[in-house]
Length: 350
Image 1 (cartoon, rainbow, N blue to C red):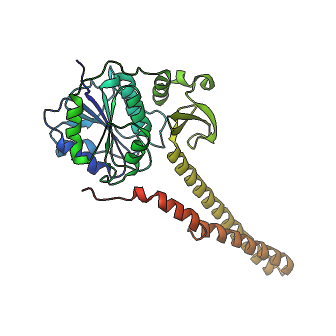
Image 2: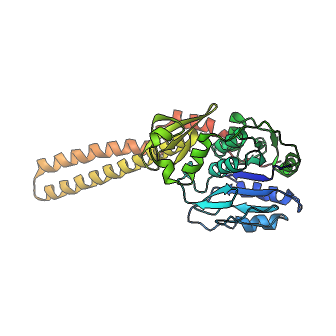
Image 3: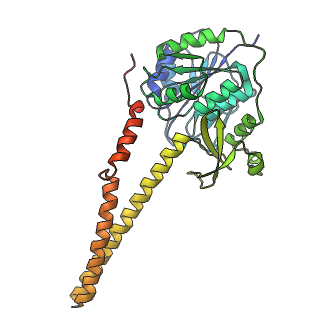
């Protein structure tokens, strides 16, 4: 009888601490294969496998292209690569970013669900925003189980809370109890009347892998409806996809965004545009004053006064934009963001 032996784990903010705790509580005789994705800078050097190997009894290493999946091992997604799972083993791809990240948890979760169905247990730990929710929904849709760290004890509650809000989660537990939950669920019988993978799951898995065939005739093949929004990564049209009431987006070439991730990226783009505008205005004002000084040196007073007036008006506009950037004109927006960010404030796990 098959066991639920494919364990996929997502973590983000303060995830190293949570993953250390999980690794330290897994038994040496653990029969599952554990796959971990933690958001990490693309060009950084990851020592997470070394940290997890020291924390617990299971050997840990970065997943390698073509590695066979072995029980009692911890595989960590390396920087700048999605780690996708297949029956043939591990595949590392520099596919399109999801929520601006590579590696990202959702491609790993989705590939595990497509390849292993009810053998998968998805685990979402501490983190910001809503990464992991879409992948966990795919795990459940294809017969797997969902485990979420208790938001009340998670250092950052947004990822666990989003999963609880949008996925029919099977278990919620503090980080120190999740290893025991996994052992219990691994030994539970697998029902025979479980869902099979859908065309949408397969298509999204191909898009995450950067499969050129999946990008051909995207309008006909894409698993969603055209939205009014553009992709922050490439500027292309985004398709809107619904996992129940969880809304997310994907573009023609495969970049994927959740609603919260897309909002955050658009807000950063707005911030960048304001800084660009401020720089242009400051340069224009400086140039106008330089021209005015030269004209005054030539005794062209009227011309100098005209450029000085233009400089003053430009500086006033620049002052308004600087005030926005410094938060002096955005108190209502800041207050609203502050209320929504309460869940993202770090807490000490009990």
